[in-house]
Image (tube, rainbow, N blue to C red):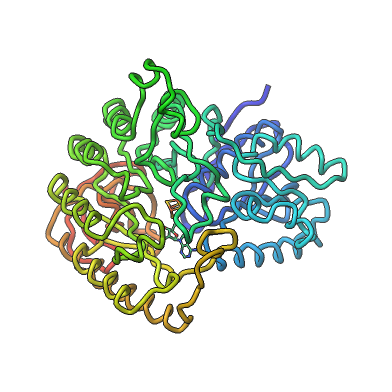
Length: 478
Ligand code: 5AD
Ligand code: SF4
């Protein structure tokens, strides 16, 4: 009978906790690109393969199996993965027995084509097919290529207890929904991750309970669109209409889920990502305001500040509706940080439309954001029907303009903390100095301060004395 043990190893000055099972002899190396959901999926994959006799390794040269969890959101993300495959090729010359598997969105998008295009690849597995990995590994051990990219309307991996990879032992991700039904015209996610489905709250609570027992202090609830979380017994949300009266009466929505976890685990704090403006309702805002241990930060992508453009993007709200939502956030949760995703240069974007994005940013003054030039993705409605007609140099210039404006707003937001005392969860040693801790406050802002006698996972109060546009610098209040 094998026993589980936890190894703490130093990696670039940070203590990482990796779970290993004694008795497991095979080694897997897992690398993840893209969103937090992918990071969490890799932990699910690690759990499935741990049962098959694998332990994780940080050294690719000694791995029996190298897995790369991929992202298709922009062309550049796919190019990064292709580059990594070249690196695997070089390592395979030293370690010829090593097998290579591609997981995630690129696997789903390219399917068996991957095996033709990239000779190094032995295994292609889409995001809903990870349970099939043991069978697929058997196929490749018998010399056959293996592909499973079947999408599901039910799979949530609810009963799989993720093996935490590269964990700081303090914060963890817990997936609550999978897939997306929104069909934004620019986005490949509905094609690579399939239909939206919610996970059974009981299995969510079980996973959080386990993290709590292992002394984790922060959980981020994950989904492409967490606000549309709805559990009524499983399956697609659209079937809710036909659900039994009992199922309807006992259904759990996102605000309720937040309420349940915040009440049940008062010593842990909760974050969530990503919100969708059309689904983020007042109940969620009131629930956030009610609980101190729900972090005051909402990631609320806008993509564009112009209503016509939002329509072309198939976003289900207008500029005005979004701004009303922002006003509601500030009214209900006055200290709430808000962050954005914005795309510049989407099909037909005029200078006026771009200026509307800048003026919306000026109104909101986001705490931080993720900004991108539009990248056409094969198979999306935009790729099929709308010309990618904004020249690259204009995309670049517009992107630069919104990045500069965001930097200004981020600096404005961080400056406002100077002189304040904030509560910080210690998450690790500062990257720049071994003598400093780093952590985040409720608003998701990074704080750095000198170490004294605290330890990882402690919550401390820090007086903020200085800042950059991304970091607060302070001293601990005794
Ligand atoms: N091009 C550029 N950015 C994109 N995003 C999604 N699809 C594309 C694309 N085709 C951005 C959106 C989304 C974030 C995760 O990635 O801003 O919110
Ligand atoms: Fe893509 Fe839109 Fe779904 Fe986000 S909400 S994953 S941008 S389709």
